[in-house]
Length: 471
Image (cartoon, rainbow, N blue to C red; front, side, top):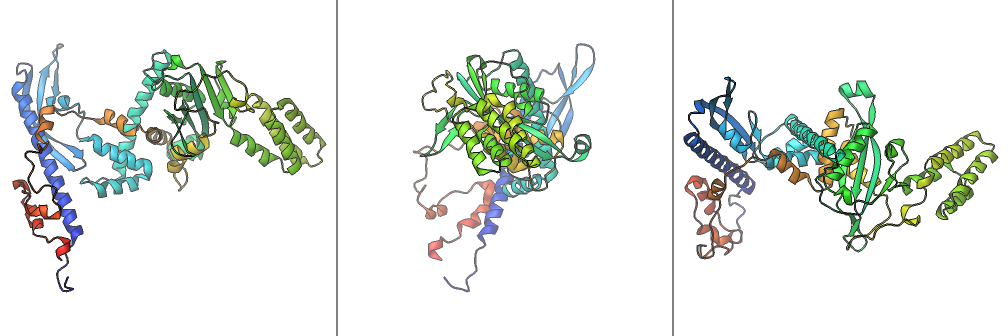
């Protein structure tokens, strides 16, 4: 290769190809929508719908903005009033002026879960033919969050009536709950102070082995809210009932750090509470500085001698002459006293638990500390991030869906518009083995023999590029 030979800027070609393909895609969508509109116009009940002209609107897609026209019709109602409708919008399941495609909404939501709204806007703009601002990314997250809020309320109402739609069956359900403090801004800061605790919970039916020493929680459900313990419990039950057939759940094991809201409202005898081992052990290390006393306390915990444990801690408090040390012992004693029924891990209590389903195991609990970071903390805490109550909850709903692998499916159901099968078939490529060109799949030399669509003549210049091995 000569050093004086002109160097091909492949990045420029790649960008131009991407831009042109996006333009072609928008043109195809616009053409299909117009064809659909003309069919609706011709087949409508002309006595019921009177044509009142055309109106322009847009659909924002990953290829770019598709601007098209659709007809507006007047319709006489039974009460004598007149309403105006867009038959194309109704057929598509589209509401309002302008619309963002499900795929674009999904990409924005995923990007917003991974980083700031500004970073999400930049990522989506760079990876698609659509340019969006950080405000648009925020608006998408808020709109989706509000729709998810409506779904949560419906699920909670159905669960309260015992009409949950969940199908998964499990005789034992594990629940873990914890809170994370987030900084507030604006009116939320004025009303609630500089920060507020977001309550987070997960539920699962066991653990599945995914590696030599690795396990993953099975059929995990996640939920989060700034609201009160009562609302948290109601929403939590709705989220569980939307996935699990709660009538089949015979027992539950709840793991938490001992906060009052975690157990508030729980009166069912089939619910077993467990003080999170991490927080339990952390309390001993934090409040007992004497190594010998610490060893005694841990030995009593491990031997399940809870009554003696509380007596010994009280004795340490009474025998020390250091007021600060005495205060620490009393704090630990009060913490253990309030959670005495949960000091022994559930699997060491001799509970009559159902056998785990095939392929699953009942392992020790304590996954919440990791989950609260991966679900909420990693995105919403740190980096001087501040939230409003509604804005934080809307994003948290998306984060919970992402953590449970349900984000894409849920967003498609929330934002999808329909297209008749006959139109979808028009853009499918019929490439059977008999019709495939002889040089298809023959490597880079195939580019000299591939046909170029008439609408993409700009691609012909690329065919003159020499293969790299000839340079």
